[in-house]
Length: 485
Image (cartoon, rainbow, N blue to C red):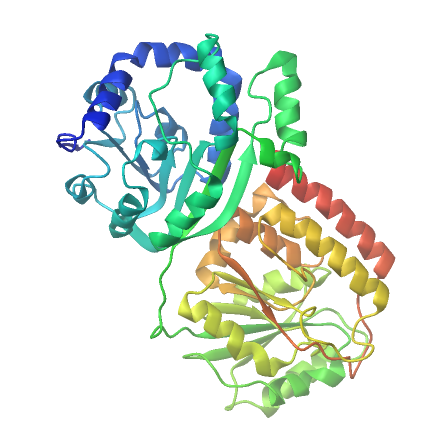
C-alpha cells in the first residue's frame, strides 16, 4: 500500500477547525453510525447500486475508508486531511491506497495515480471552499468514461437536522454549506461536468420496526414525494468533445417477414464511419426473407460487407443480441427492417456517438410530423404515456422508448451484456434491455428525432393490447430494479 503524506492547505482557519472537530470525534462518529444503522445501510446500498464492484474508484474525503472498501474496487484510493482517520483506514483496509492531504490542494491530487472509473464525493462537498474550482482539478484524474458521484443532504432538511442535533438525536456536526441541487448543477456546469442522473432517497431515515426501510424503498422514490427526501445523489461525466475521432459502424437489421424491404435497406444505406458492415438477423420468416437476405449479400458482394444470420430464439430482443454479438466494429446501430426510420439518417446518430455528445442515442418518432397511417392513434397515446413513465425510471427525458433505432459503443454494450444478470432476460422487444442497461451503467442518453415514415411493405409485428400489457409489467419490473432498491 502506497500512502502519500501531504499537509492540509495552510492558512485556512475554517478548514483547520473542521479537521480538528472530525479528528477528535472519530469514536463518537462510529457510535452514531451504529445508532443510525438503518440510514447508513440504505446509503451504502444505493452507492453500491450506482458503482458496480471491480471498478477503479477514488473517494475524496474518505474518512476511515469504510465506504470505499464497501464498493469493492479493483483499485481504490481514498484522500482525506485527517491523519487519525487515515490511520484507522490503513489498519482496516490494507488493500486500499490512501493519500493524506487537502483535496482542494492541487499538490494532493497530483500525488494520486489515475484515471478512475468512478470518483466519489460523499457528504464532504459541503465542506469545500471552492466547489467548482476543486471539481475542475478533478479532471486530471478522469478519462472520458469516468463518472463522478456526489451525495449530500438536501438543503430542505437543514432545519430538521439542526433540531435533531439540539435534541440529542443526532451527532453534532461541523458547520457545512447546505447547497440546493440547482446550485450543484450550476457548479458542475462551471467545472465542465454534466449531470447524467439525479436521485433522491430516504424519506424516513430511521428503522421504526421496518416501516422506515419499506417507505424508503417503495414510497420515497415516487414522483413528487422524492423531492422531500433527505439524500440526493448526482452522477456526472466530464464534458469532452472529440471532433477528430473516427469510429467504424455495425448496422444490425433484425428482419422477420420483411422480404420486400431487404434490398431497399442496402440501396438506401449511406456510407459513413471509418469502416462499415451490415448484419441481417432473420427471425424464421414465412415469406423467404432469409433467402432474400442471402441473395442481396451475394448481389452486393464487393460493394458492402454484409453478414446474414438466422435467429435461434424468438423476438426482436433475441435478434438484436445475436447481431450485436457478431458485430465487429466500434459503434453498434439498430435499423428496423420496415424502414419506417429512414436509413439515410443513420450518419446523424453515428456522429453523436463519435463526437462524444452522448454514450447512447435513442431515436424518437414523436417530434416531427409523421406520415399518415405511420402510427395508429391508440399507439401514439400509449407511446406518450409509457415515455413519461420510462423517463422517470431512467432519469432522462425520453419521448419514444419504442423507437427501434438505438446506437451505442460496442465496448459499452459488452459491459452491459456482462452485467445483464442484474435485470435478467426480461425484454422480448430489445429496446428496454438496452435502455435500462444504459441507465444502470450511467451512460449519457440522448434522443435524436427522426421523420417517421409509413410502411411500404409488410405488417407491424406489434400487438397493441398484448404488448401493452407486457410494457405495464416492465414498468413495475424497472421500478423495482432502478428505484425501489
